[in-house]
Each structure stands twice: as C-alpha cells, then as structure tokens.
Length: 356
Image 1 (cartoon, helix red, strand yellow):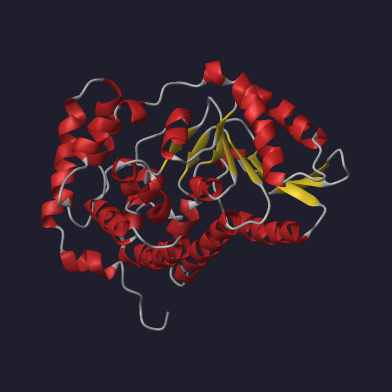
Image 2 (cartoon, rainbow, N blue to C red):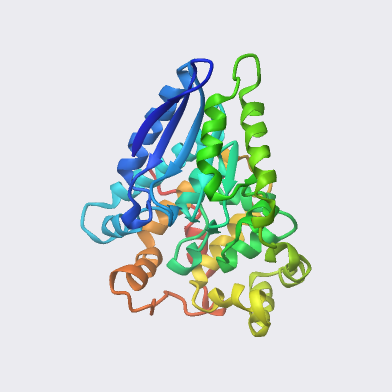
C-alpha cells in the first residue's frame, strides 16, 4: 500500500490509498488489509481530511481479487487454517468500514475489478468506472461463492440480474456496472489527472464534501459520454429475467445453459456454468435467497461463517489447485452435477462450528 495526501485549495487534504502490487494485478493480501484498515480509521477521525481517494498502481487492474494463493496454503499446509480465517474476518471488517465511512470515498475502478476488488469498491460513496473497467464475481469457478457482501448487493440489482451474475460469473463492462448499481460514474481514464486537479482546487469550505465530489465527477462524466459502450446486461435484461425465472436451482441452471447456443454476448455469458462447481452454484443460490431481507452487517456475518467452512471442506482448495497451482483446468469437484448434490453437505456450509 502507498499512502499520500493532496492539499486542497482551502488547506484541507484529500487522503490517497493506492494498492501497489501491479505484478499480481493488485490482489488483496493480508498485509494490504492490515495497512489500509487502520489508515482509513485515522483519516475518518482527522478533521482536515475532506475525502479519501482509493486507486491502484498500473493500468491493468484496480484489484483482481483476494490473494487466493495464500488462502490455498492456509487450506493445505498443517496448522495454517487460522490464517485463512483471519483473512476473511479482516477483509469483511475492511469492506464494512468502507461502506460505513463518514466521508466521501472515491474509488477509481480502472481495469480488472473482481472478487475482493469489488469488495473494496462496492462500499465507496463514489465508484468510478472507465472504458477499461471489467467487473466480475467469478467465484463459482473456483469452488467458492460471491462473498464480500454480495448477498446484500447482488439482491439489490435490477430484477434477477444479481442472481444471473453470481451463478455465471459473467464479466460486466462499465455500462453494465452502472446499470446494475455497482458503479456511480463513468469517466474516461485519460481524464483522471484532471479530475484529481479539479478536486484539489475545489472549494470544500461550506459545501457538503459529498456534493463537491459529485459535482466534479459529474462534470467529467459529461465529457466522457461518447466513450461509454452499450450495456449487454441491460440489452438482454428480458432474456436474463426469463432464464432465471424458476422454482429450483436445477431449473434455473438448465434454462441458463439453454442459452449457451445463443449468438454473441448471451451465449458467452453462460459458458462458465459448464465448469462451475455444483457446490458453489448451490451455495450462491441458497445464500442469495436467505439474504433477501438481511442488513449488510448480517450478510457479512453470514458470509464469514460460509467462507470459513469453504476453507475447511475442500471444494475451494480444489478449485484453486486446478486454476492456479497445477493449472490443469480440470477441477475434481466433490459432486459432479447438481443432481448428485447432497443437501446435508450444502447445509453444513451455513452452520457455525461449536466454539466460534
């Protein structure tokens, strides 16, 4: 992490937090979490800090997700499980801190934003996407499930787009992110320096800090309009609604798989279902249904229970092994299909172990 502060026109400061690990696409590590959380708390308490600017080094990615190679070690090396538990505990605390932060948090979500990166971005008060932004929650492909508060924010997306995105892991472009409520503004990446200069020279005295940020971003969003692509999620909204309309996970997945022969975006969007973990699909389905009326805090508490169980039960470790360790792309899931799933096995993921 790199921390700095920019002085504003009126003598206040904009606090900057920069994820600084571009070689691994700024994957979120335990060290980063432990640096960022206390720094954010200090800035929250510092009256001279007007706003926080959250960004990443390099142009490829804001944050490609959690450091799952370290999580793999915690699952496979003797005596290391507590490290994985601490990672999820502290990651969710950081995410909640951003969601409830008392000052504007501008997240410049340029490039790849996935998994744990969405956890950082989702809670920011001003979430900016650029023409290079690619957002996704692809956890079902690695034996996990969309976490970091996804039980809360996927349920708040238009119609059943959240269920669709969670089950398929489909990538969103910047216009999709705006449509489903994962981003607030689209600004061309080349204008970033001008946005920063405008925030630094703005008059923060006597104005609401949130309105100062909104005013600046609105100005540069208007200049960026021509660069905004179409939103495939919006264009295919009716198809998504129809395919996700079912009374069981099996029915919905079958309807989604029927779209795999479709031309263009829709056919590609559902391709990931073929290799997804059946356990992960069941966890996603059940978690989203259980979470519909839960608060963000309740969702994160429930996700901690689920994620700790994912560390213990083998499916997550197998997904990472196939993708990143052996790279054979041939995960051997515990259950090969939804039809074979044991209901008791799924229920165990939602139960807290005694003593926790």
